[in-house]
Amino acid sequence: MSAKKLLVLPGDGIGPEVMRQVVRIMTWLDRRRNIRFEITEDLVGGASLTVHNTPIRDEVITRARESDAVLFGSVGDPKWNHIGFDKRPELAILRLRQDLGLFANLRPAKVFDALVDASTLKPDVVRGLDIMIVRESVGGIYFGAPRGIETLPDGTKRGINTEVYTTAEIERVARTAFELARKRNNTVCSVEKCNVMESGLLWKEVITALHASDYSDVTLTHMLADNCAMQLVRAPRQFDVIVTGNLFGDILSDLASMLTGSLGMLPSATLGSRNEAGHMPALYEPIHGSAPDIAGQDIANPIAQILSFAMLLRYSFNMQAEADMIETATSAVLASGLRTADIMSPGMARVGTSVMGEAIVRELDKLQG
Ligand code: IPM
Ligand code: MG
Image (cartoon, helix red, strand yellow):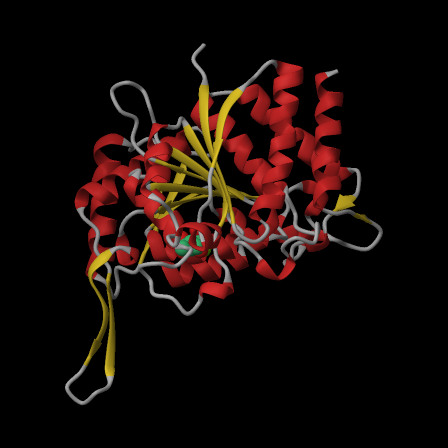
């Protein structure tokens, strides 16, 4: 079997320390299941700015393109708040998404039984919750032109961003959502603001047409984004797959993640189109940011990063058994009462980043037998 090429980009803040826990799992896979990766590691975000004066070098983008998958940590550091949008740490992830054509950002929000009390919502509202948000990730207002800040004749300024979606952009992300729904509860809710935005109206029309032509076996509903935010808090279990644009997806996925108790729990996958040779560009990252306030203290929750690696095994390498093992081991560790600070509750045992990582590896050992 050919080598599995991984590019590992820990980034800023808690990125490196949570990534170290994934390395433990990679070592375990090598030792106990004879699965090896060819790993290259590089700098992105503020870490890259400091050394290379750019949030991401072209050669890192090239390496990402040549890899089977990219495992990303997080970027962002208040130290760089003063610099322009053409140089911010966040540009690293935005460029990777755009240059690799990673248009479908899959953000699951799943409640672990052991954590049902960690949610700020009532247990009865979130128990068993399992939502998949499919967020378009290379279009919309994040990338639309014109954009910028211009000076008006009277000396005041005008900030401009543009929401743009084409038929093709809507169709390809909608296909991802419908295909995923077929493997889940067969229901897609498409979210936009067609009551005030033309791009939202087109979004709804294109998805309705695609549904009729290719996916009429899937149940499709439509919802305005503001109502969706409300419904996610009121009765989140009504959703299976949600498909939406870049900005609404950014916001709604943070909201959905909190239903599960902690941002520190949630992984994501961002996928592009498979080419004729069967290669699909893909990047996996936790939803949480770089959390600079707690970086380097061994208190961050490594689970989102670990579950991102499980998604990588599942979607890029079709290693369902190993992905299942990692998810099962994580549930077992949570059930045993270990908690990092972000998901701590009375009566549980508080542990740090590396103890949590070790505990998951020990649980993998048990599963392997
Ligand atoms: C996310 C983040 C990014 C985004 C930032 C870091 C650019 O919030 O992945 O959700 O807005 O897409
Ligand atoms: Mg976000």
